[in-house]
Length: 164
Picture 1 (cartoon, rainbow, N blue to C red):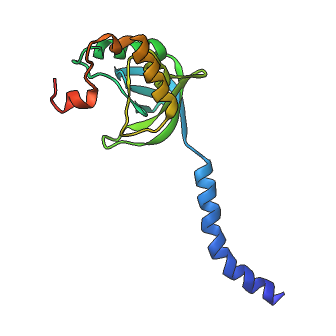
Picture 2: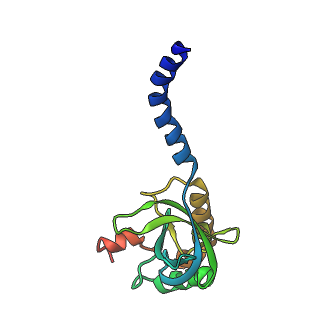
Picture 3: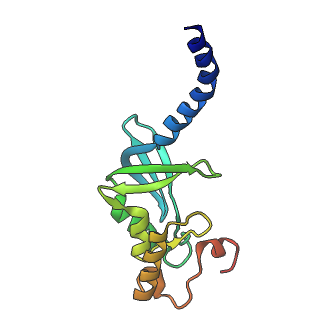
């Protein structure tokens, strides 16, 4: 019996951190609540059941800035999809501004993907490798939907750098 105890004493410190790591990684965070504000085409505010407001940045996409062509239309598109509706957010990370970054669903509809499909958003290449988003963007370009109606649309990241 003493051999068993000494083995347990040796293994327990090694196994406990592994068990904790697997438990934490298996539990991706999700948030639920009502969308109470639309800041722009890729940022909304979620009001949780605990009455907490959380600013959400849609992951993997970037929409035109407010003063950029299609900026107001992108904001309206997100409002049409989400405002005053119950939403679920699959959290990915926090950005440098403290916003929660994630994929937003209303019912079964992925709003990040839907905005790209409608031609209201670019795939944010620096922050995603989601092949579905790239395919939706390509389809929107070919169909000349939304911002792809423009002759030479300027991406938001270029716009922010001053290439207006």
